[in-house]
Image (cartoon, rainbow, N blue to C red; front, side):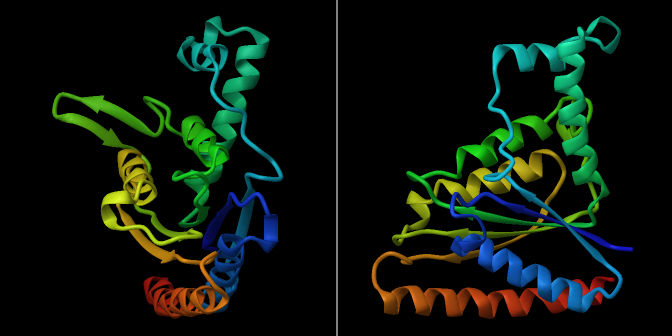
Length: 205
């Protein structure tokens, strides 16, 4: 049975444009993958704690030396990683907040980027250990941004590649706050891209 991990980060929950797009993607994915399942992680409803010195120290402490509190921190991170590892494909909804990704998504990345677990350092450089997965990223923005001003796409792409996920498709919906016409035009284009992506999922099954 194939599994899709759906990660939402909009502060507006299911009403956010990025959430609606990933929900539409998940519905199409299920239609193309009978018997598959979708696991949802809503980072606005269940935010991942931001990193602190104590949490980083818990990750760095050998298991035999961890306190009860440190073990609880690592167990939480391990559960997020296990959820990611169990998924065949991942879809992320990423709205732009103040020129960046939501801080809750950054906190999630901080908890799944673990040395020796999701990546390792080798003599030839870092190696991602989360392999054989495909990711789809839906980025929504109120304005229009040139490639030079795009801080989200490179960050998400580089992080996913760092942990081993290099098969990534991006869909952008921009100008959502410019006007109603601009919003509808952009969302229509995003949905067309979504429809073009989902058949590839079925062929790969």
